[in-house]
Image 1: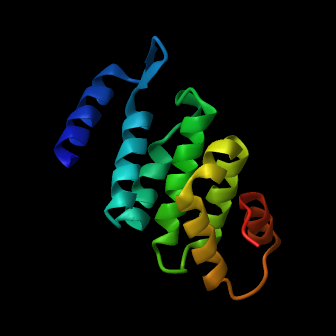
Image 2: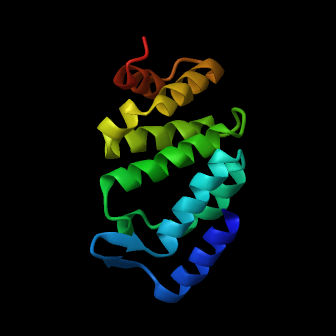
Image 3: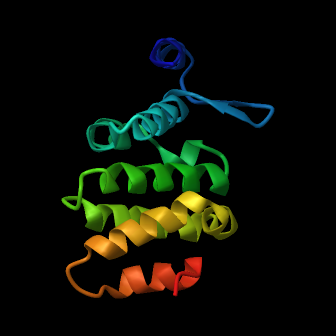
Amino acid sequence: METHLDEAESLAGFTGEKNFMLCHFGPSNVAAWKLANAVETDRGPEAAERLAPVIDLSTLGSADRVAAVHFDLARAYAQAGGARDTEALRHADLADRAAPVRVRQDPLTRELIEALDRRAKRRLWELDSLRHRVGIA
């Protein structure tokens, strides 16, 4: 997978940000896919630090894609074992605000919110708000 993403990154560097027939391609989209891949392989925190500055959300073309990037950033920061939970919570909230139906239906959302809730040292209204929106009692 890394080889394919590296090749896409090389091509995106040549093409720049493009939108042809609603198929968005460019450095931001490739960076978003690299982030998603890193999160799935438990390399999230380092990847988020490296890739978040590269991703221009305005080029992604849909609220669903913007929400996916924010959700991947939330999961990436949550993988830091509590050290980056504030950032994880912020990105989970941004994901929900961008595409609430998508985020609230994703089973990984519930897992993420429950993990953040377990690690919280005190009650946070932002976390309580997300728990309520996702339907966690």
